[in-house]
Length: 310
Picture 1 (cartoon, one colour):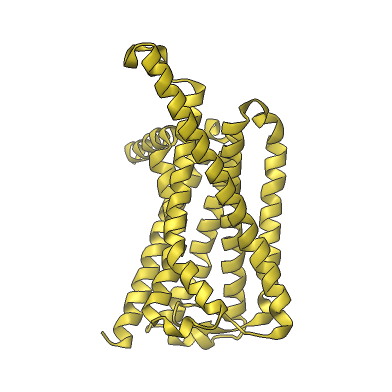
Picture 2 (picture 1 turned 180 degrees about the vertical axis):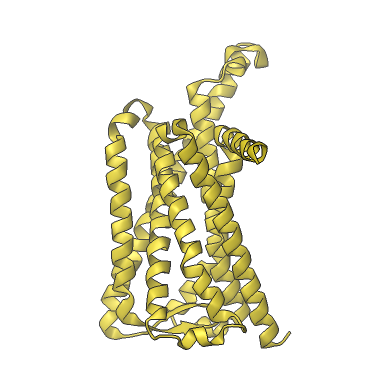
């Protein structure tokens, strides 16, 4: 396979990511807006923020990447020296918002499962709105902070490229800590707590069912609030598991790039690792639409209503 063929594959791959991301995220946003009862759950507010940022990335930064790597639009790379900076701002801004929103989805679910009696008090609707506004503001500031360090394209993965400068080391460290390290630590802690609570609760439910005669007991015939919360917690764990699996290849790439060892990786690996992690923009919405029982039913109802109307 020559370089031109691989460039075509890059463009097609990015286009597929864009189409699936826009389609699924628009569907999630539509179902959340249409059904007010979904918005009663605080977790849904952060899922809406996550979905909106993924949609924004799919409508701004991703199309620029497709144009940069396409053989049909080679002049896009040299259109203006500001384009890589604009691309960096969009990618970083919406990427930070997505990661922090996912972090708060797990934190909300952890509080709902571990401390259900204080859940409504700790996470009031106004506090959630303030947190979401703060996430978007911090993401915009971190994206803007990268402008001085971006001046070229990384054709290997069809994204912007930062310049290595000793004057910007402190800025890079700050961006990495705020944008990646802090939400990653919170994500790991929250998912770990949720996992152990679910495991412990399953053991308790199994023991109670056995003690009252198996599946004919009340726990089996009357779904409790605890069971619904545990089921929802499992779904959040699925979202986080998908994020982890898709992030591992890019984490390897990023670690090697930190120590200037990324030259050892083939160009194809860099591209695949970058766009696999960006495919999270679709996977998050897909899991939300299919694994959350109430959301799945309302989505089916909404699509059927649209098709019937047509």
